[in-house]
Image (tube, rainbow, N blue to C red; front, side, top):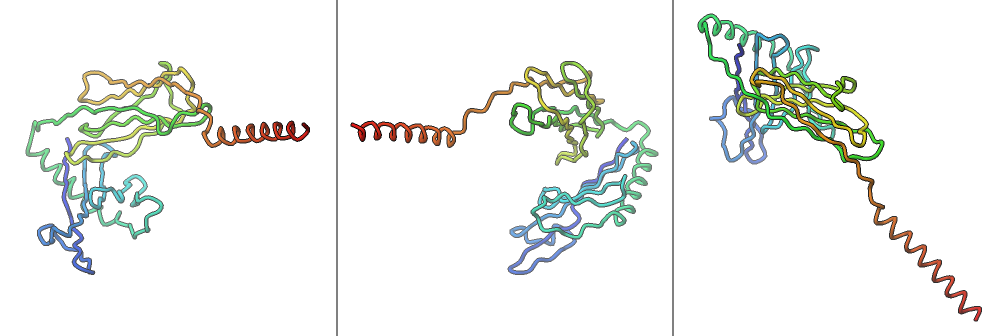
Length: 244
């Protein structure tokens, strides 16, 4: 059984040249509203606690409970911001677990929500002969947050180069996650991602056939080659008439 809490802790209001943090959305002038959102989930499933921070619905960081630290997820070109909330959220997660236990004590047979994942498989980059690439299996819309992912190449299990990303929360309370497989694609090979989840009657598989097409000659290189040929031809014709 899982208890989910999704709340907006504060917002950032801009008024002329001022920026002020306030405690509730009701205090903001909505014509100048930026929302700082916290998604918090606790569970009686091992290692399933989640806490993420969002700014205007874009994730800016999360709490890594295994390594006991806060992690900034802003892109490298963004200005760094102080981000050390780990010890601040321990009490919040503990309170969430207390409420979870209270709910379990009061509801003997609580209804179980169960939503199956939607699955898409694709390559990260354009395919090039002999070049390493990353296969991505994207799963979204599932609940609760527990999936098992396996990769195969021509029906043979592949584990080397495989990683499973961190679960993220969708606006509707369901979850999403990426699985990655780092490979050097082979022409004609069939790669597949198989997903297991409690809401699926049987494992679901998505396949991708590898078709590598040789890149056409670059247009600039072709133009230069033609220019050189025409230049040599012009010199030859000029020399012929000069000798005449």
